[in-house]
Image (cartoon, rainbow, N blue to C red; front, side, top):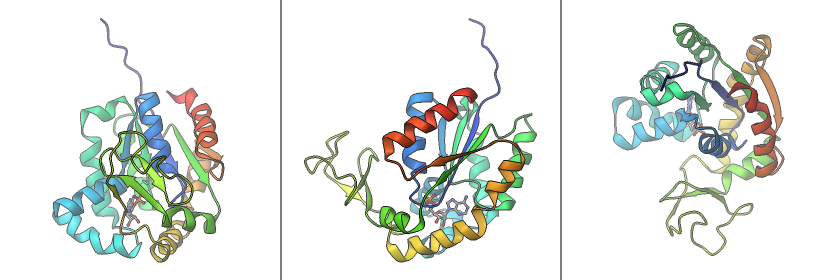
Amino acid sequence: MTEVCTTPAVLILLGPPGAGKGTQARMLEETLGLIQLSTGDLLRAAVAQGTPAGMAAKSVMEAGGLVSDDIVLQILRDRMDQPDTRRGVILDGFPRTAGQAAALDHLLADTGQGVSLAISMEVDDEAMVARVSGRHTCAECGEGYHDTFKRPANGACDKCGGTEFKRRSDDNADTARQRLAAYHAQTAPLIAHYAQAGVLARLDAMQDIAAVSRDLARMVQPIV
Ligand code: AMP
């Protein structure tokens, strides 16, 4: 069979903590076959493994600040080098600074690519603090839950039946406020960068998960 060569989609989900980037990226990964690439997940894995990058990132992450561009770009490049990303990627939580956005543009230009679509998931600050503060995930399969908005139906994970749940150490109200401040200072300006590049779409992420997912699927359809 002849392999058809198409340019892989590069989709960016921009938005503050709690906007639903991870939840929606996981759903898009399942439905569209793109690869979710979360720099937050990659950094947490580096922290858990105790790598030099992880050790340097740990205290910054716990304080709700942004890890240095050098560290983030290194782990991103390593992940982008893996063959599965050739199917196209959903960047979740990257880029977060002007330096990261410029580095991404260069990295993609090297292979004749560009950002296909950047979706700004727009939400209300105080609602974000509430969303982030109560969230937790199934330790077995990673399905996301929330103390108020999405509890497992019978105490066990709705998806896999697991009974262990975990919470991120930075998912508390104080750190969430720091993370929001970092978003407004350093990441929100990227919305203008992608608007200027002609690849920006805006999404009302205050809607429920199903409605956000429906809107997102409609926006992403033309690029996959
Ligand atoms: P997240 O899982 O996307 O909420 O990220 C958790 C934490 O990891 C953030 O609060 C930052 O400390 C760090 N982090 C994740 N992605 C980046 C990035 N692209 N640039 C800098 N720091 C990041």
